[in-house]
Amino acid sequence: MNNEILAFDVAIIGAGPSGASTALKLAKEGISTVIIEKEKLPRYKVCGGGFVYRGLSNMSFDVNEVIETKFHTVDIFLGEKLHFKTTRKDPIISMIMRDSFDELIIKEAKKYGATLMDEHKVMSLEKNESLTTIVTNKSKITAKIIVAADGAYSPIAKMAGWKTDTRKLIPALEYEVYVTDEEYKKHCDSVRFDIDAVPGGYGWNFPKKNHFSIGVGCFENKTSNIKALCEDYINFLGIKNITSIERHGFQIPVSARTDGFVKENVFLIGDAAGFADSITAEGISNAIYSGNLLADAIIESDLNIQETENSYLKKLNLRLLPELESSAKLAKWFYRNKTLRNLILKKYGQRFSEYMGDIFMGTKTYPVDVYDTLMKKVKNAIL
Ligand SMILES: Cc1cc2nc3c(=O)[nH]c(=O)nc-3n(C[C@H](O)[C@H](O)[C@H](O)COP(=O)(O)OP(=O)(O)OC[C@H]3O[C@@H](n4cnc5c(N)ncnc54)[C@H](O)[C@@H]3O)c2cc1C
Image: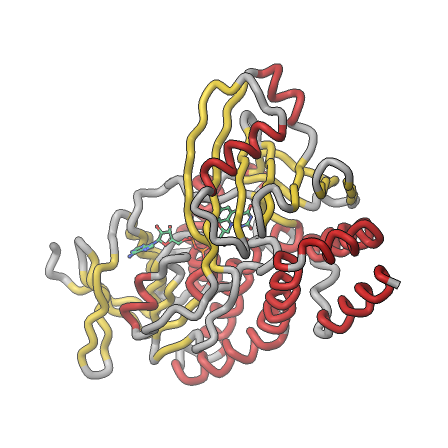
């Protein structure tokens, strides 16, 4: 342990898309910023790596070098009988691997002067009157503002005083599946989502440059059998001639915390705050978006903690929180009412798939009156 205490204006814990984007924006404004990351970069992150257009189109610099594949068409399947296809002029989903994507944003932030301390795991926050010291396994750091961008488990939120976890965490698996060239060619042209591939959830196949990222997420059904279900899903997809599989599992927080996003000088963003979409579990674009909102709040408030808090909460309430509230209501209904939902999808499936396409593109958001709208559709489908 180095005894020297390093001082920064802002310390960001976590080098995922939320933390890296915050660092980039702050560094561009000349604010002294450190990113503290427990892993050595680049590091593998359990993630499908499907980056939707609303996130891609808002990137402040060109990330094409880390895009593996782009898809203008998305296929949504409901069992073997129902299939909806949605196409857009711009790519609905671009595929990334998170090691290179996250590292690219960090590199960009470093260009503007941000400091990266990777392989520094935050162990505790020590409070001493008005000063908080971040203690890592190798160093001590102080900062006026601390950003917890440390993902689904968010140890920093616990250290900062969030006692109970009010987010909804769902289990999800991600398998990196390598096949022969011939087999790859058979399946590489389609991005597919299979609703009910697992009970109360869905499965996906995201073709990357030379392999498939295949996974399942269980939104409603607490199954202990998720590994077997993922293997079944790979069989269902008809993917054969597998040369190797890397199996990973993690949790996705699919609802926002209900007990706030700020405590004293500690601010939560991305998964630490619970900002992934409740229906799709798509979290990268909102991680970046929330990081950018916080960076704007810090910059506009000139590092004043109270003003930053007010401004960050105001910005979150403009779009992200109402959208997440609607998506949470819809997700509950969608994953719990299989029979009724399937009846509706039979009639309105293409419209649903176009709507999800628009959400991914960023041209629409979930309606605020989502429940009423849905009930009207239920009545129309039944009558
Ligand atoms: C199986 C699965 C599939 C997914 N697929 C998709 C998808 O296809 N598309 C999509 O948009 N989203 C997807 N998601 C969600 C997405 O991965 C997250 O929403 C996103 O990574 C959130 O970014 P973040 O920056 O908030 O946190 P993270 O990306 O989790 O980054 C947190 C960082 O903090 C670091 N950290 C943690 N603790 C400490 C500590 N004590 N000290 C220092 N550093 C620490 C971690 O090492 C990590 O690098 C998926 C998630 C899972 C689990």
